[in-house]
Length: 440
Image 1 (cartoon, helix red, strand yellow):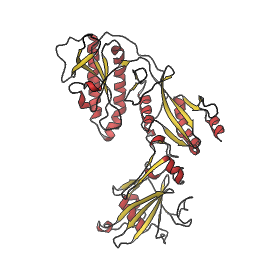
Image 2 (image 1 turned 90 degrees about the horizontal axis):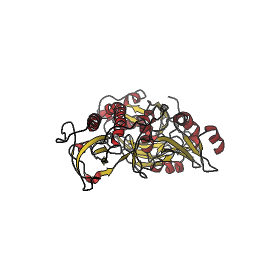
Image 3 (image 1 turned 90 degrees about the vertical axis):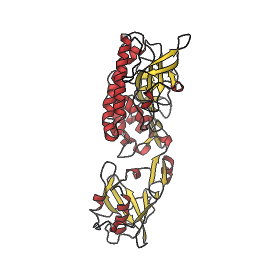
Image 4 (image 1 turned 135 degrees about the vertical axis):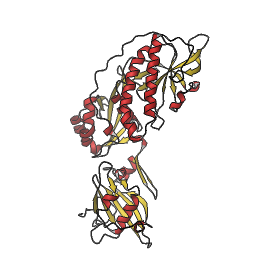
C-alpha cells in the first residue's frame, strides 16, 4: 500500500510513514482476514502468544497503542481512522515501507474478537483540534479500550460522511393525513394502560389490561385493585357487556403481541419490532373510542411484563384521560455560533406538549394529563430516536451542507422544520439557502 501523509495537526513528524489498510463498511471494521492480506501470517498459535497491546491515548485524531513483544521490546502504534481506511504508523518507522511485525502483532491482538470496529474513533471535524474534541466529546482511556462518546448535552452528534447513529432505521415517508378516531360504544369497567420506558431489555409495548377493582364510597374512583383479566386467568363472576367484550378481546390480542415481541432477542427482535408496533397501534386505535366512555381509566408503570400476572401495584397507578386528538411531530433547528442543535416538538392544535418521558406509541402531556396516541409507527420511532440522546441532535457548523443533503432535506420534506432566526430569534420555516447566506 502507498504511504499516506501525516494528518494536519498530528503530534508526529510530517515525514512519518503511514501504512494504509482498507476497512469494511459499515462500522469501519478491520478483520483478522483483512489483516492477514498485509503481512505474512505467522503459523501456529504460539506465534501470537505473549503479545501485550495496551491503549495509551486518543489525541489529535490518533489512537496510540503500546505493543510489547515476548523479547520485552516495545513500540508505539499510531492509528488514524478514515472513512474507508486505517492508517498505521509505528515508532520503528517501518523502514521497508511495509506493515511491520509490531503493527501486525498489535492489531492482531486488538482484534481478539477476530474483528474490531473503528467507527468509534471516527469523528471528522472534532478530533483534529483538542479544544473542539473536549467541548463535544467525552474520552475515557483504559489499557483495554478507549471510549469516545458525545457529551450528553449534545445528544446524537452528526458525523460527516456517516450521519447520525441508527438513522438507517428510518426511511421517512411522508405521513398520511391524520384522521380523527370515530367515537362510539358503551361504558365499561376499569382498564389500565400498562407501559414502561427506556432502552433496557425489559422494555415492552403498551398493553391494555382489564382489572377487577373496588371503588370508593362515592363510586368515583377505584381504590383497590384485585386481579388482571387474562386469557389464562380470567376474572370470573362478572357479566361483560358487548363493549367490555370488545375491549377484552383487544386486550388479549395486545398481550399476545407484547409477549411475543418481549421474548425475542437480537436480530429477531429488530425484525419483529415494526410488525408488532403496527399491530399494536391498530388495536389501540380501536380501543380508545371505547375507553372514552369508561368511568375508570388508569395508566400503570410496569418494570417487567411479568408484572401483569396478578394485579397492579397501587403505588404505580395514575389516572388516565384519553384524547381523540392526534399529536403532530415537527422539529426546530437552532444556530449556536459553532454548531446547530436539532430538537423535536410534539404539538396538539399548535400547542406544544410537555413530557419528561415517553413510552412506545403514546405521549403523556404533563400540563393537561391527557394521553395521546401517536398517529403512526414512523412518527413514534423517529421521535423516540431523537429523544433517546438527551432529546437533541448536534451538528457542527462546517457540516451544514452535508447535514442538509444527507438528513435534513429528507426530514423537511416529510415534517415541518423551523429555524430560529439569528436576528429576530423567531421561528421561520427552514430554508437551506437562506440559512447558508445568513451564517456566512
